[in-house]
Image 1 (cartoon, rainbow, N blue to C red):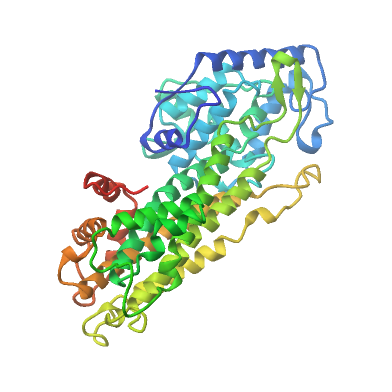
Image 2 (cartoon, rainbow, N blue to C red; image 1 turned 45 degrees about the horizontal axis):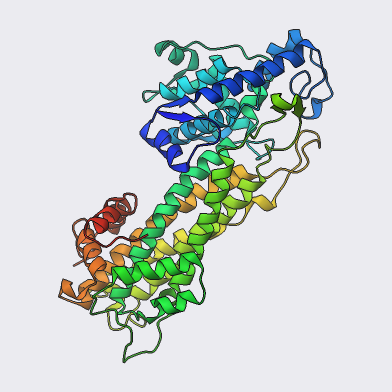
Length: 509
């Protein structure tokens, strides 16, 4: 069981809970902190102090005092009124990640929630009672209010949940697993919905996928280099030592490992001095995306272990501070940055596909990589598909974070729109998988015409080529290419090829 304490969560943990249904519990220290901050809330209520979100309304109603008698109704009203989402439902894995991330933020002990409420959230997660959460409605400040409100409805026994593959009323699902709904008390509604956890959940999953696709971008590149008889000199370590961006050097090392002992990729060629930028500058382009993704990882690792609601309680200092930790700007900017980094990997990959299928650019291979051009179109339209996906990614990589629309009667007069950035990155990553899949099958087809001897390939590219051919046969005549792309996409969605390279002694980073 993963034991959370508000400060120890890793993105890999998020994926294990989200996808592998790992169980989650609280560390003892976290339980004590949660109870301590709850006691502070109770003391404030008893003292009848005016404290935002505890004894007042919310947003532009922050100056409206709420009596202790009305506090329970206030919390219920908050959850119901903020459940105003629309659009497609978030996938179960995203909802599970949201539940985990919100629980981890609450475990820091600055939110004033009751331990019993936090425990119910974790019990629902562990028993796989998943609230139905629409994907649209958040403006990324005050956090992801709308999606988190939909998540929180189930704790009250309201709304619907996904349970064992069915959509059923929340109260019915809770009863099936032996849990009981609750009545929220002072501050608890705000503690549940004031936060960045939808952005955090979507971003964590996208980051995990993007990080894995970095290796497949290098794998696809190495196979294209074989097909185009690339020049290896630009991958020499001497070049990258004098421009020491970490990602750039790492890409160069990966390619050198994969094409080692190739008789097609040489340090120098008699027929040309240089390759086109998509080959020669690939370490710089792939490497820049690697460094960008590494930077976003740093931001997310901080964010998923942060207290992001408002107000925040500090029992040891006997203070309650109303601030802006719920604002999604750190995530909004980094998610837009992530979209650019991922999109660029697809951009350069598609340009390599275009070279592979063009007999004017592919150094002696047939047009569209088919033996009987005219009768057959070969992989002509595969490049169209890649171009379409790249164009779509370019549009979706326009930053959402540059926009802000005032909400709550001008009280919340700058918002991050990070939720839009978070939703966009999912599609950008998904498109990249298909683009890289296309490069893999097109490069493998080009190798069919380049050499009859598999031993001409490098130590790594030989393994890659054989792995692809086990799943996608050579294109001897036209057929439904969508099936080829779908099979190749399965390759980039799995770690199997990467693990095989490691097993064969060709590990890439």
